[in-house]
Length: 187
Image 1: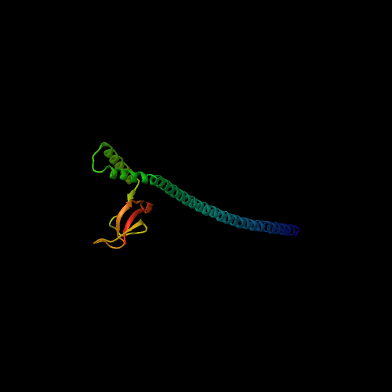
Image 2: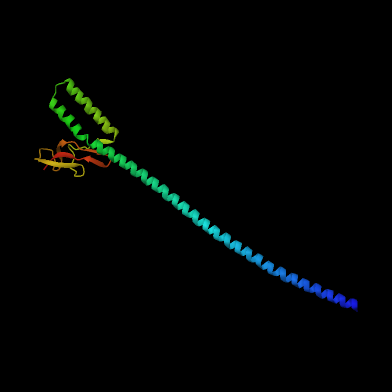
């Protein structure tokens, strides 16, 4: 019986140990699960944060590319406008060359030949800059391109509003008008 009692006590102690072990191991399982959930939540939070920063970086990069493109366009336009402004200052020189050739008449002097060469060279420079003369004589008057400074009585075959004579040539570069043509228009 003593053995039996001793065996019973040992069994009770073993059972208690097993229960304690199970109790100790169960709470450890919960924190491991909780730690795993916490780690997953932290991982998701970090991934969302990473995605937000990545999205922000992509937007900023696109904004910067747009900024560079706008600046390049603005610089190009400013350069073109400045170049055309300078070229427009040479238009009176082109007019004076034409007046000098008209004043020289028909005689073929070296001075006239020199003026013709200068006028030709100036025309080539204008052409290289995309500057062209506005067609006027014989055309219908268009206030977008012409400036009427005189009116003339109609002659046979002339229509009202037709340009009879160009008093000063007009020039344009693409869509930009450097100077309107000064014209005499049929009434």
